[in-house]
Amino acid sequence: MLAVAPAALLVAGCSAGSEESGASGGSRPSAADRARARAARDSRELAARYDAVAAAHPRLAERLRPLRAEVVRHAEAFGAAAESSPSPSPSSSGAGSPPASPPAAVPAKEKDALAGLAAAEREIADRRAKALLDAPGELARLLASVAAAGAAHVYLLTEA
Image (tube, helix red, strand yellow):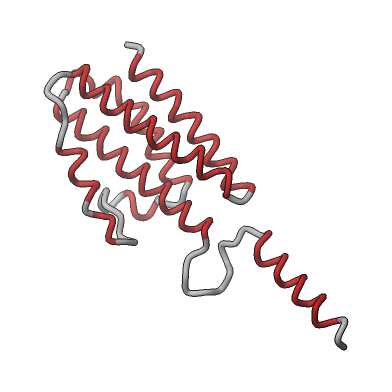
């Protein structure tokens, strides 16, 4: 009986940490859930920035449309499908206030507006590249893929 108890604890400890850690049963979200929610929120906020730039610079709208559509797909891939349609602000935490300010501050020059979008894409791609190091398998692959897409967006926004 004494030999079974440590083995059971070892199995329980390994299985709780090595699985997706999304369904741990606790009231606090797992690290993977928090990373996924952060990535979804970042994508929603980035889509709002694209909207603001397109509204301020209508000549850029057609050029930005495919990049924005991809950012929306990224948000959906991270689980933001239901939340991204009603409003661009996140409903899960108090961090919903800051997203309103970046889209409002669109530079007057098109070149500067594109540079601002590129900087936002770069910052988010870098954050995702760091987050994937601690993420479980499937989420790490998704973060890596979306970070690579963000890096491609940076190139497309700066090379025109």
